[in-house]
Amino acid sequence: MLFNRKSGTHRKVEQLIRDGVGVRESSWNLPAGSDRVALDALAEPMSRWVRDSMSEMRRPYGIDHVALALACRDQDGRILVSNSFGVVRPGLFYGAEGEGRIAAFLDDVGASGDGPREVVGALLSLGDIAFSMNAKAA
Figure (tube, rainbow, N blue to C red):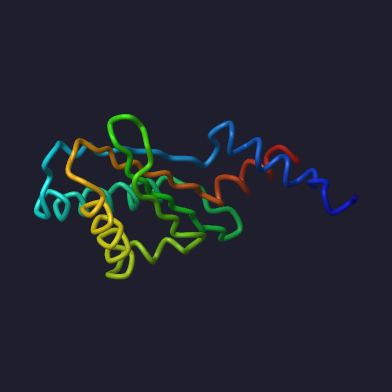
């Protein structure tokens, strides 16, 4: 029975995320018929948004990890493609590997159809969560 119960810390973290602590979101529209050039052009503003979002986050005790999730949905809101980068260090997005992962996601978006679509991103700062947990404990 004890394994089925969530710890108090786990519940607090879930509530903070539901409240939007450490969560940053953005979206980019793709008009119908967007070609490879349009998708390639989207990689740069997406990478810039990730880096800009990370520059605003708190880093208590050196906790600077982030979780990034990307999705593409059609005009009816159906998810066509999604990808989670997992929990990573910010340095990933300042080099070729991070940009390559975003480009690979956009390759999948390109294969998802040619109707109007929206690409959405959500970035979670674990440092912001830790900062808020520490502030509530004080």
